[in-house]
Amino acid sequence: MSLPQVVLPGRRGIPPRVNTFTARFWSALEDGALLGTRCNACAHLTFPPRRICIACGAQDPEWIELSGAGTLYSATVIHAGPSLYWAGGPYTVGIIDLAEGPRLVTRVLGALPPPIGSPMQMVVTHHDDGCLFAATLAAAADN
Ligand SMILES: [Zn+2]
Image (cartoon, rainbow, N blue to C red):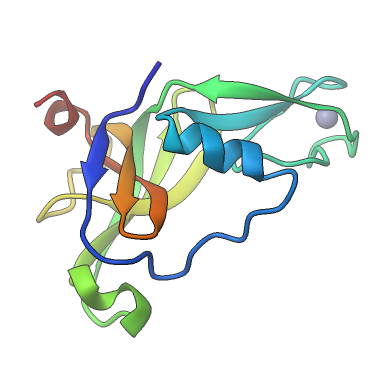
């Protein structure tokens, strides 16, 4: 499954720190897949991916490709943000409940925040120095 791709000019505000564990996540994202981890001991699913299960402490995760579908739990428009993120400001940040369960905070693309409860789609954003992820209205992602 490949997430919709969006090109955003400019560099990422804060490039992610990539280590031997997270490298797989960033490589998959570049290829259009959003990965989480599921604990092989207790089946707890996490996003972002974690080497150590936050539910039981086991260190036996397996990588799971997430659908990218979700629901908007909450959102706010940032009118006075840090300069690192300001190139596209004002911008919206939302809390997304992914279809598989994990909740995440991410940038929401679009001029206005969607209504709470809107169906959302995670997208891969491509910047001059690499990729990140964001969310957009599911209907907007279909266009
Ligand atoms: Zn666990």
